[in-house]
Image (tube, rainbow over all chains, first blue to last red; front, side, top):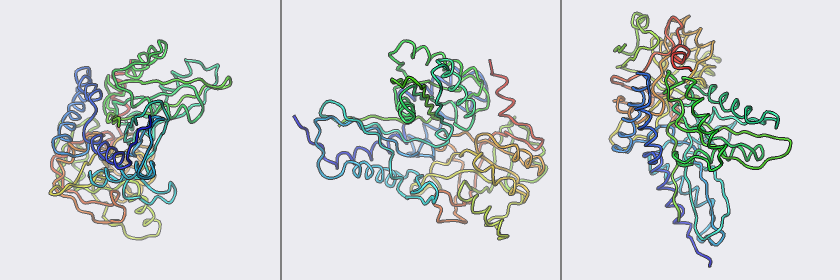
Length: 281
Length: 182
């Protein structure tokens, strides 16, 4: 059976999600941030984490964005193959939702129309949209506004197969060390291993949207996630990069088959304002 | 230790500020980030006047989200300072005394800080809602066309920052991490 979804509904949903994501952390992130306060040993680190708790409280109560960098709107859209979209162009409907969310929601417009000429588009469009076609008659939308303090510290490494898992570990630690205070720790580290050059980067981005309490279903990947979280926290970077135990809240890793000649590793770093919300329409 | 200081700064205040101090700033500071710095730099290259005097002033690397009605400003946390590294030494040589941002600085900036007896502070990144509460007034004074990147004059009250690089060149990002590395 074909199910019809109107573009107006898509626009309205995206608009609401952009506003919500920028004012309230998802429950899993909120919980991770609260736990971090208890775990941190450095007095300054603890003070910073308390400030971030106050910040979240004020953001929600007074409707002020958690961070002034309300990000570039990254949107994952999983379209059921039995969905028929009516009312116009899907991409235009998504961008219209972003436009309305950022303009009506008093969010910052941080997008320039050309990377060299750099003129602000004044409505935060276009969004970065990743589509996939899946089975079913629903549309699952994930909105993940991404700030660029941490985005700028993200990396892709094209390792050799001989580098193996040790090479992957070194790549992750190198990216986190280089990011240091610039990426607004405590951070969340999204990693994509395998695929191609672009596939590993998209997996790394997608990994950031995973529920913070979920570990990979693949046993060696789960182990790697836990080991890397420990190793990153042993770097001592700490909240705000000013020393401490909590440098990262989670390491989320996705994998994919790759070529006999390659071992691509994408590392997408996100600050503690790791915004990701999901709705299904 | 906790310290209270008024902006614009005077040289005695700066000498007292040590890497690791928690400082509350009250007074007038100015915002400028990437695009405003590029314009100021180009103005200097063409021997034109800057839209604000650098002498004793503090620049906050920040581009706010829009203010809701009845509020002076929207979310207002620091942006990454290293993107201003190319431009900062020239401004420090003109008398700029304080920079507020987040993240590492280049060797050239660190040298210019010591040479000019200035200071680099970090505000807590991602605490834009909290920090906006310490901003009592905001007015665009130059480059209005740059939107969030325009130069704003801010009146701040007990604005919380941490001294990262002091006038002697001590750098908290380098020293603090050592204590917690395993």
